[in-house]
Amino acid sequence: MRMPVEWQPVQQSRTHELVLQSIEEQVFAGKLRAGDRLPPERELAPVFGVSRSALREALRVLETIGVLVAQPGRGPDSGARIVRNPDDALGRLLRLHFALGSYGLHDVLEARVALERSSFSAAAHHADAADLDEAEEVVRRMSEPGILPEEFNELDTRFHVKVASSSGNALTSTLTSAVRESVRPLILRALEAVADWPATRTRLNAQHAELLRLVRSRRGEEAADLAEVHIRGFHGTLVDENRTGDAVEDGGGS
Image (cartoon, rainbow, N blue to C red):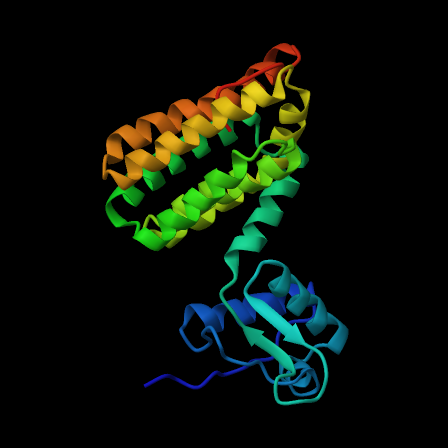
């Protein structure tokens, strides 16, 4: 039987952070779960002993990190509700920290290699036909004549995320999506700068097709090995460029 949520007043210093801490404690204790609604602001602020503006600041932070959604209005669906939505939030945070230089290209490369080796290997054992059919359709669209780098990059991201989501590991999927999203703008600029875009596109997509064939054939270790070669190719070139200052002209994988 679930224990009732017990709201307690918080201290006035750094008010919104203390409100956050109090809500986090209720989640950690299992008293707040995904789907639960918070009391209305007019009721919750006096219970915490804080202003409604401080409460709203705390709720905005929770909404930004993907654990709360707020619906304005007075209807039955209005108010703040606890949710599970880590994918967009993690991607947003990683993109910002990457842009700020919190993580180097080499660190992101190694994280991608570890994550995608795991996801391709696991997908070979756990992916169902529907997931692989969807990934194959993405590969087909990437092979269409005249496709430009921007659309190719979007589909490339979708392919890698789809394989990760079919691996049976939700955390691996979320982290793969966040890491791949964090470097998408940089990869796009590199794709736009290659000397021979049609040849590069053809080579990259040949690797995508082979990766998918290996996953369908349940050859997980081979798929993991090729995924590493694929990622270290193009992404690895970006790391080399960052270290030497040379221009990126071509690459082996995205």
